[in-house]
Image (cartoon, rainbow, N blue to C red; front, side):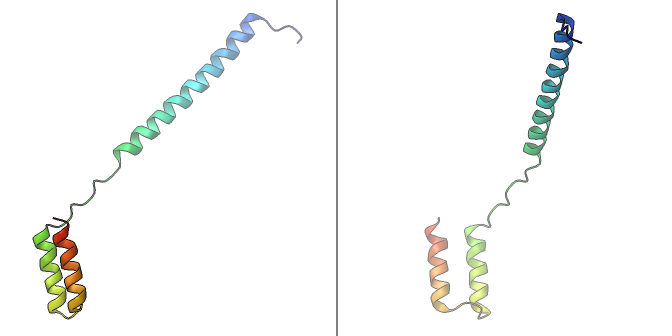
Length: 79
């Protein structure tokens, strides 16, 4: 058991290299598949649609006049 030949070293290097290579392939595959599963962000409604929704909330009495004015200014300012 005391002798350690070059063949032992080669076998050891092959096993270690194969393990590192396999680990690299697994990491590459996981990162690649994770990139492809991202869902695209939903598009924001148009300014006109947002203003219509805001006016509908005011008409239903769900927002005050001050809140309506503030939200309207925010929407228009973003244009």
